[in-house]
Length: 454
Picture 1: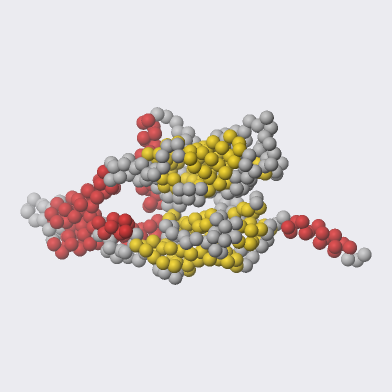
Picture 2: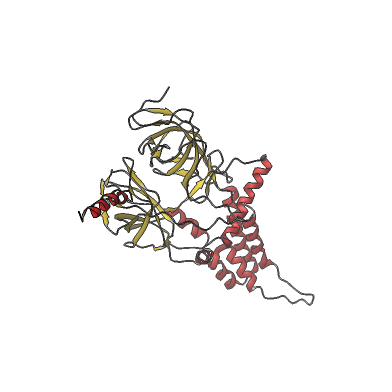
């Protein structure tokens, strides 16, 4: 009789404990893992890399790996980045830029347990961010062009005001010298696929996120911050997180090309039944693909989905709009879900370099015939064209014409890159995480293994 209250307490607490942990299960082979580094790492073979999961991992609609789970690995090899190296050499930077190949081999769970990970080699890591489509723009063509220019100016200002400006200043200084150390940048991301099934034990669920500070009103010169989570809808539409099944590119994709995406996280009905299971397939097509062209004309890419295939082969017709995607920092989404290049400032930077290039030709001679020293002006002209190499050459030669020529070379490179060269292409790699919003449902919620209500 004495033990009965303790027994009752154990029976009551057991369900509460079970709901505070993830269920055991197996993550199948071929599951994509999106990873991101939290700090800078040296660019050398053998360097240990520590990253975290950007998104939770589900299997059979059960959460097996929460968002933020630590994944460790190491750099196994380095290979040259030829295109970046050639472009840097034209600007006086002779750093042998390299691309690391990283092999992630271990998961570190919340309780500290380590689980071996078998994954494919991670290559071509790059910083990414979640691009979110803005609300529909108002106004005509002039208003849209004004907004585009304002976005470019805000991007220039953010380089001097956004967090991390001291580190950006240091990296800019490194870029002016002929040789500088290279690193794997904080925020570099890779998406790797598991090559063997992973048996995951039950583990404590992640604690709820602490409430952040209240949002600060954005000043007119600041870039609007993208929301951390995908947009939500109060109209009954689904917000679907999915992974692209194949790569898409403005250079190789064609209008009408069929595409697929696999639902990565289950969607629940208000009664907690599953509306869209993890593993369902979205089927659609490329609606517009235009390759990048010369004179700064960037590529354009848009796509949509028309069908949702559930695991039991039941097919539902849906209408979707791309509202978010993991992209490079210089790619944005329009209000219609079209991916395009971020507007660039094509005037301020070339004009600034042209002003610096012309400084050596300004002799500042007084009415008595004396001219001030031109060493400082020569160094400005050389730095504008070839960085530290241009500065040394300009000072050593002592000729204002040589210094101005080097400076105008740098201004010409800026004009060519922004006005004449081929524009930026739009790429979505395989397993890119996208967010699509369906149109409002006018029928009963879809439930797996249940035929739709006529």
